[in-house]
Image (tube, rainbow, N blue to C red; front, side):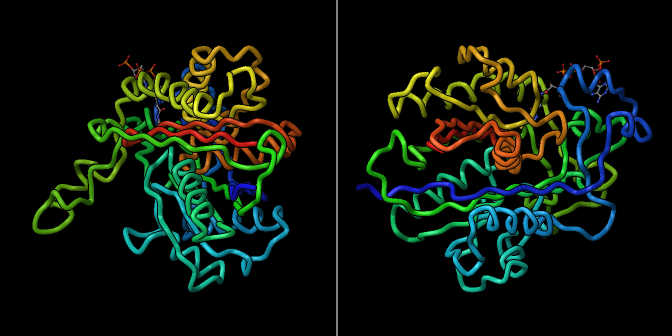
Length: 339
Ligand code: COA
């Protein structure tokens, strides 16, 4: 018997407010047709313009994941939160979420690997469990993008793509005799290349400024808004996602055709189309996309995908599931799971 980690339950949450592509035209020069054809996105959910925080969305998703796992917060001995839109610069969002969940004392860890954050978090949870530092880990990916984007025409290349939302998974230690049938994580594979850090980033506030983390024309320059070189991101995503997915399969002696369900990060439907084509996935039904309804929710796309696939009856016990992500950093990562 080998000590491994399995996903015991998942949950997700998006705010009620739906923002359609047509809705966006009141703030910027764009169109439903442009957004659909370039990205596949039809709508996204944004929080109301109130005091809702990223950890508030994380709390809802976490509680749903706990319910799905049949556990209470007292059963959790580690909390990991992946986000690029933290409640505050510090302390980490995991600490804010921990206070809301009511689990003081356990480790609370923030992961800052953007769109790959949930997969990085899954790898960390798996290693903490395999190393016996934790038995049951609550992993959350949560984002509020709507408060941190330039929704004028100047920022439209980015702001039409992103949505708010959260997803969570409860991961627990399991003794595995038969990996071909028992639910567990086979392996995770993590990569980054910081040479591309400024291809998708937010310039400030930053320690590059002096004497403060902002300078005088900070807001006028729009240094607080995310900036993206979309074509470069696209080019790398369609290479790195299939590459890291294959790495997971090869590490465990599986072939592409063995995978029952692919959950890719949801940045752009066209990226996922090219990734599936490169991998030679023969059956479109094996790729589960949610970007049409939620846009890119960064660290939350993978757990939202898992939860939505479950609700849609597309994810069943015993399935071989490959998840893969690519994003700012650049970072890219995959995990292979027996569900
Ligand atoms: N609505 C209408 N027009 C827009 C627009 C919008 N929201 N955003 C950009 N445009 C315009 C551009 O200004 C440009 O106009 P021009 O030709 O007059 O200069 C034109 O559309 C084409 O822009 P371009 O950047 O060439 O489009 P594209 O085909 O590269 O698609 C992205 C843009 C952003 C959809 C695409 O590059 C992409 O998806 N990149 C990856 C993004 C991503 O995955 N980000 C998250 C990573 S985790």
